[in-house]
Length: 271
Image 1 (cartoon, rainbow, N blue to C red):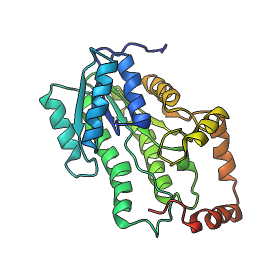
Image 2: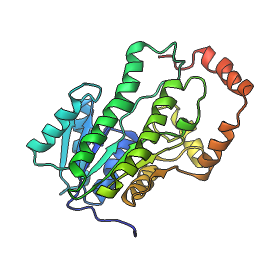
Image 3: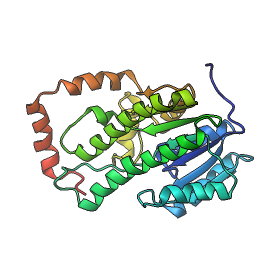
């Protein structure tokens, strides 16, 4: 399949759409003429994102659906809202996520629930609803945001890495289950991205981008969408990230414990 530049007549449902990579997914898709159904827990920020996208991409339909994806009826709310507006998304981007650097024993139970509900239950149910509606009815594309951490069981990342590993494995299996019916699933596994997720100051983010340690949200979003549209099973950005998978896998226990003692035990970014 060649490069796809025109998505007029298509509609994408994007979760976690108010900033960072999520907003860049929306910008990239809108620049290709794709209509957008945006959802996020923050209604005010979602409305602002919708206004910005409508201003920058006149003629592209933008619909905002404020939703707490951890709520049990979230998927019903989203699809009911889409139906009421005559929207039938044929692209799904599961971008919503949270991050915390802390040991599992120290994370509050409510935040553990959020990791599981957001990264696992909500993503699974959204994929299931989307796939059942699109299989045999024109097909569709799913892009699920995993992470490089899914290969990196390091101290302080137990909940984040484990739930992101679920996303990668689930996405791969779902791809095989639905591909014959016209629905492909891509797991994006980014390394560091220059967003506010990890709390780095702007000067360090700029330096990290310059030396190739971090990718920009814009560049990552463009490449990830390209891979999704081609029906690729997985996307890892950058050769350095691919090498790091092997390096971290070979990291001996004493080194992992050093990370725990020097970073985690000092209370960095406790919840």
